[in-house]
Amino acid sequence: MARLPGGAGPRMRGDGASGARLAPHWRAGSGPGSGMPTPAPDGSLSIIAVPTPRTNLRGQARELVRDALRASLAKLLGCAPEAVPLESEPGQAPALMLPTASIHLSISHEAGLSLAAMRVGGRIGVDLMALGDAALPDQETLARDYLGPRMAAALNGTPAPQRQAAFARAWSSHEACLKCLGMPLQEWSPELATRMRRCRLVEIALPPNYIGMAALLD
Image 1 (tube, rainbow, N blue to C red):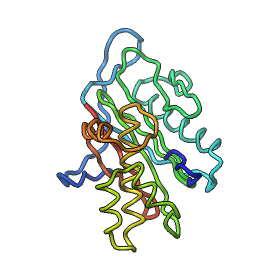
Image 2 (cartoon, rainbow, N blue to C red):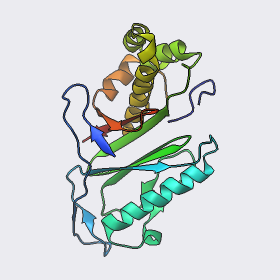
Image 3 (tube, rainbow, N blue to C red):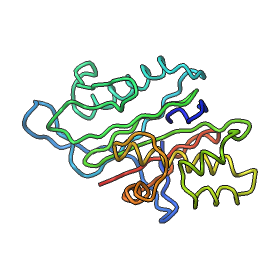
Image 4 (cartoon, helix red, strand yellow):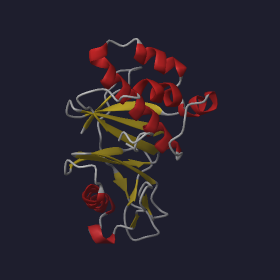
């Protein structure tokens, strides 16, 4: 997840609408251009979960998740990990610099766990949030400003024991959609909500102290 305003810092299961299960898998075909296999444009998806140090200092986590991502891409492309043309800049999603491959990437970090996602032939955004011992002190304001009035009201009406997880799921959905659309973190607006509805949301099955969401766009 991105750092929340104010400083707050796998198998996949289906979205709430359909309840369908989405099984990660990779399929590859061959093609000309680079001497490496070109993935088939079929929307194939893979999620990598990487245990990391339980600290908010993300340097080591970034290195670990990028190493895992490079190793997985190497298997897909049929090359050595060091030959994967992965471009990575701080604060930006990694990009595969390979014109013959339509592979979209997304990553997210929390203390103790990072996620990396790869999707062939379609856009992907993932976000991860750790559940703490108590709700964020400014959770209601964040929900109103970033998640919209309808979601803020729904969260306010959620029983207290479930409210933190519900907020984490809604916040991670918001960030995953923004990443999928290639947009920075921003407050809710009717226009933004319309754009985000193009994304299909899927919850990632993670340990109970984490919430992870993936947004897909074909």
